Length: 331
Ligand code: SAH
Figure 1 (cartoon, rainbow, N blue to C red):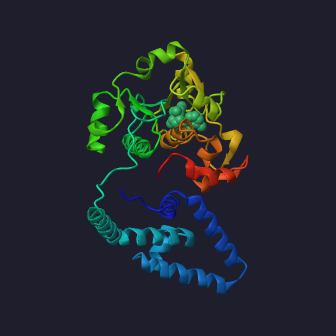
Figure 2: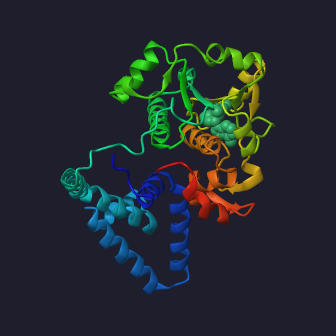
Figure 3: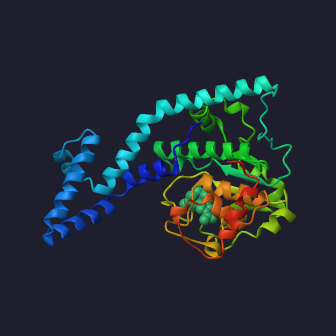
């Protein structure tokens, strides 16, 4: 499946979610105007006009919508990306076709060299997403969660060391929603479980080896060598929840109530984030996949967390970036 470039994702996110930046920039242009720099002001107006035209908007409409120059630039990038989509798709299709033909001529059969099943994987760590939080989400948030679950699946599928991926509390209604969002679900290499994580990981729980991941936990996940040592003996649960942290402390409360161990990611130990330390389900999953595959936390953070979200690396992550190619993850 084609995925937009990082720039486009960034542009799209910024274009829809940064009114404060616009306000700041507009204030700056007003300051320019106040300073009497008419030439600069005119330049900004001209640029806004020409970019507005590219978007099919008159200058008046641009002003009415309160678009800053920055926002306009991002919208133009986004539009260009959308406009070029059909050509890009066609080129990709063509490339795939000729590669197939080339392989056929060479006598190479189409084998999915990057396809590893959970069963054959050396990584025995169970990582579950609990789908028991549906009632806390509206339609849009549920859709987002389902997309994130799909992302986790494809990351695991493409990994050369997939973890043991579980979807718990995947009951009738939830399964239907997943099916509707992702046809072909029944072929997924995933453990679909109707039961809750309490039942699925009963034995782990009894041995105190079930860990609920929660950003609110005071405990920190161990270093990577611990994952290697306990390979498969400790199961981890991620809350399948997109709530913009409205329900802060929800999973920590549940883990405490259910006498289950809990822990947070070692974010403070390694990185400073420009945004919240509550990560998305897919980022948490990818980090867990990475460390359970043998990568260190610095390697995992470098690979998974978008650079724009990292304010600084507390420990030297540069070396980790260089090593990341040996990460065992194939995207
Ligand atoms: N308010 C929710 C946050 C949901 S974020 C809560 O109470 O958990 C979705 C899930 O990702 C969380 O339930 C948790 O399992 C995991 N998660 C997000 N950020 C995390 C972090 N920094 N450390 C550990 N787990 C995290």
